[in-house]
Amino acid sequence: MSAPSCDDPHRPGALDIDSAHRRIAAAIEPIEAIERVGLRAALGRVLAEDLHAPLNIPPDTNAAMDGYALRGADLDADGAASLRMVGTAWAGHPLERTIGAGECARIMTGAPVPAGADTVVMQERTTADGDTITIRGGEAGSNVRAAGEDLPAGGVALTAGTAIRPAELGVIASLGLTEVAVRRRPRVALFATGDELYEPGQELKPGGLYDSNRYTVWGMLTRLGMEIDDRGHLPDDRAAVEASLLAAAAENDAIVTTGGVSVGEADHVAVVLREHGDVGFWQLTMKPGRPLNFGFFGRALMFGLPGNPVSAMVTFYQFVQPALRALSGAGYRRTPTLRARTAADFPKKPGRTEFQRARLVIADDGTTDVEPVGPQGSGRLSSMSRADCFVVLPADSEGVGAGEWVDVQPFEGLV
Ligand code: AMP
Ligand code: MG
Image: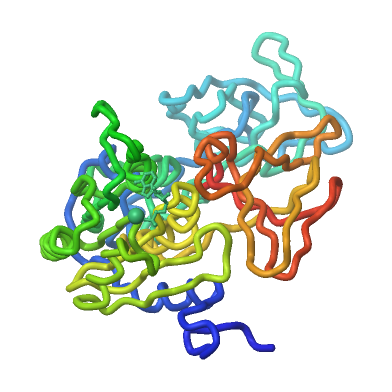
């Protein structure tokens, strides 16, 4: 049996997860606009140009440990060499003297290796008697970090499209740069829809509940470094949904909505998208998070997420996160999975791929275990708050018992 697709006549709109990823990745054109930002402001942004090293990193050939700098040829591999100390090289204070045959210099970690020397012998191999230093063994050329060994001058230090994390921030600083060219951040409009929704702080009327999706989605968008246009929550009213989506599409690179994407009579987002959008209405073969609307509304990338709070988060992590990363210019990258051992049963019925909320723990034997966090209903947001990963169980799985190995997709900490 072939995997269901959008063309499956028996399940219109059914789509497997891999196909959904491929379609989304293929549809996205990264933002090209560029701006220059200061060094710290570059954290979380995407580099817009290759960065060439204007100097060697490290700038000088220097000592990898505290000890003595000398000529390797003076070492006696089997016995002891006796050398005369002629000065001291400190980090930030080079010794302006050439080391000749039979000479050595005291040297501290990070200090430039003086001219003439090519080797640093660690202090622990030496004994000092006044200016006479006795060195046991040692290897020519050792304990020296060559100028440019990390990044040679003129070479590419970071490539365009690199997401700037703390490590990249440090690399940019090490090149002596105070600003860099980055892509403009995507501007993302955010709505929740539903007549039942109330804003925290408001008095709840019968049948109402507080809007949580706009806060989970806002949190995930913020962590992705998006510029957010929070447009509040919308009533289940076709005209209101239509006007708001049209206005948002004119001013944003992407729109994320929650709720109203199924086939119920109050599902106006789906209705408006059918009329104005170039959107696929997918019934994903995953749980939670079956309905997902993806495409374009005007020029804006459109994600209509399901309203159930867990479904909204799961579909965001699976599809919206890599899509917005691609829109930012950093490429489409699915969250990797790791293997972990189950600390308890993860029951499942065959049918759809399941993303079960779970928590990673380090077992007493040092193995990474994964444990369940309680019932998996897609409305149970509190279980999401106890979780830091999804256990990914394939469509045909009938669940796993304790002590088995499963695929785990972290959504906190590692991503
Ligand atoms: P829908 O997709 O609009 O049919 O909503 C599915 C379920 O999710 C319903 O039980 C809604 O009440 C709930 N829901 C929808 N939007 C939100 C939201 N923003 N915050 C909390 N729950 C929501
Ligand atoms: Mg609704």
